[in-house]
Length: 372
Ligand SMILES: NC(=O)c1ccc[n+]([C@@H]2O[C@H](COP(=O)([O-])OP(=O)(O)OC[C@H]3O[C@@H](n4cnc5c(N)ncnc54)[C@H](O)[C@@H]3O)[C@@H](O)[C@H]2O)c1
Ligand SMILES: O=C(O)C(=O)C[C@@H](O)[C@H](O)[C@H](O)COP(=O)(O)O
Ligand SMILES: [Zn+2]
Image (cartoon, rainbow, N blue to C red; front, side):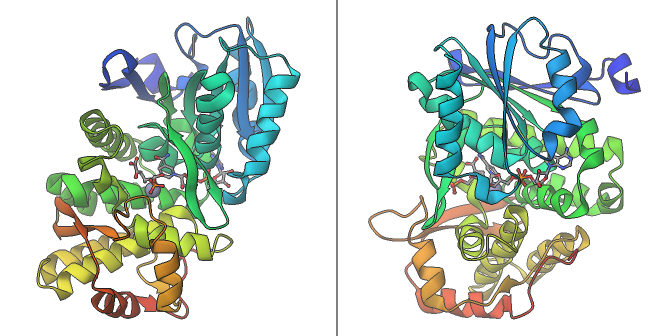
């Protein structure tokens, strides 16, 4: 048992959604805790992938010995958030006669969590859902807030549902096995919270970038905790993205276009980092973000091993994907735009010329992760 668990240093954050409120527990070694979750039903589907299950599957199943557990594994990678896997998981549930009082536990990163959540939202019109996120990105972002989805060839997350988990269990020890690129991806979403909501947190990230890059346990736990606090607060205020929740999409309108065009070579966090720079540059160009703040954003992302230039694509290609963004209203793209560190707004944007200039300035033919 890890020292943190023995000292009982679990942090708990509540996502306040009335009767659908749920806890996020954060700590080292939590996978060895009994029970993993309160009031789990008898039938459990453990959804994981071929990378994560060999690492942590036994630990989870060891805590579920009094339950009937069926494990379903999907392949690794963004491509697994697919209609084919959605159907395959449904087949497993039906083949094993899972009833509506079953539970689905997601063990993995954002891909596993998003697919598991969408299955949980729709199997027999909705069954209990639990998240055990194992990437930094999933721990700070995707496991919290109930956005679930699969991808379509026409774009990211185009088919999905808002469906909240019953609980989220974050074992920070899982991050020891994560590769450097996926670790950096999580930091992109952490930086996002600083930019949209908390200038002090952003300054803390600048001051602690060395510790974060070295995965220092204390720094990492604080970064996860603060990120989850911000996300929980935003989701509680606007569960279905009618207003303030849209800010969590900073960099994503551009980022999703990059991902959709380059699923093989760009990971979500990397695309979000490059998208954030485009949004920041656009505001800087319009004199609505100071050059000091623009430079701070660019520098921090670089220091955290994230790309700060997007791949080059014709403007029409950007436009095709961006027009499918879920924030589009009456055909007009709405962008999340940083106006200062700690502050952002959501704005309709129809000036494609200015957008094209910003995209071109922040794109590069050799753009890719600095860790490649
Ligand atoms: N629902 C939301 O609110 C939300 C938020 C952000 C991102 N997302 C989605 O999440 C996905 C990205 O998530 P991600 O970055 O976790 O990607 P991912 O799920 O593909 O995981 C990244 C890689 O890490 C591996 N992995 C996972 N845990 C590991 C561990 N502990 N040790 C070693 N390897 C491990 C995975 O097998 C994969 O190869 C995207 O599809 C994105 O759209 C959703
Ligand atoms: O929780 C949210 O709200 C977010 O936007 C979080 C994002 O980091 C995440 O990538 C989300 O899946 C994007 O959602 P989408 O609605 O743009 O598909
Ligand atoms: Zn994201």
